Image (cartoon, rainbow, N blue to C red; front, top):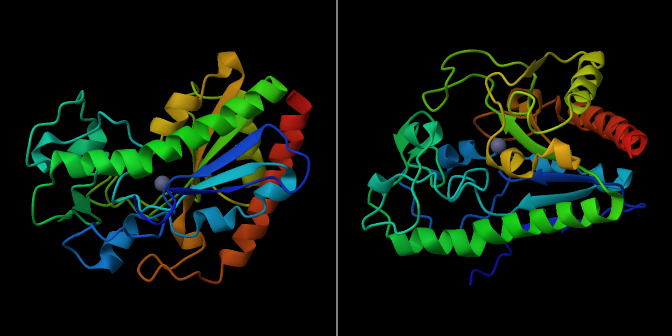
Length: 282
Ligand SMILES: [Zn+2]
């Protein structure tokens, strides 16, 4: 077993409310067996660097926050287990395979490409090593998030889940919108299927009132985590929030920029508004 835990959980510091945040892509611990070919600086551009830190106000509003410690390029917690590219593997894969558009782009469960479309590996991966990544990193993260959502739902009869991400300011070769400048925030509810419309509308309205431009389901609709956990008919609401990285960091060096502190304050305001919404809906 690797010495690093697969995730970190931040418990509410006040009375819990049925709100859970997860940051699947901000992990910065690179396991020793991740022998990527491009330089680490390029591979790290896959990360949603700083995202879990930007939401550090979550426990203060009664939310729990869970963050992955492993890097998204190593194994992507926001993909389905079937989203695998058999061509990446040296030997046969004995589980179901259903490559999505993300795998076609090189960014499925195990990324084949680094940012800009540079191959991630100089070799094929053994099926057994991918299996280990799933067992040691991916599944524990998924189980922990599921347990947290189930516990809040059991206690309150409803749960709101915010799946936290950041995105490059412009689409590249690995995206469906190459070259296009993104909005400041992109909310994804898989075309209105993963949460109550009122939740998406509330988050959009709060961010717009702070002066941000907000797109909805364009170009990101939300992927695996909101798909699994968003079942509004069961009062399980999941919303993906993508933040444009240039609002808070330099996309090359990953260093926080002058906007970081303001964004953090604005996310605190957003969390306070979500708290009020959640308490009002219970
Ligand atoms: Zn992400």
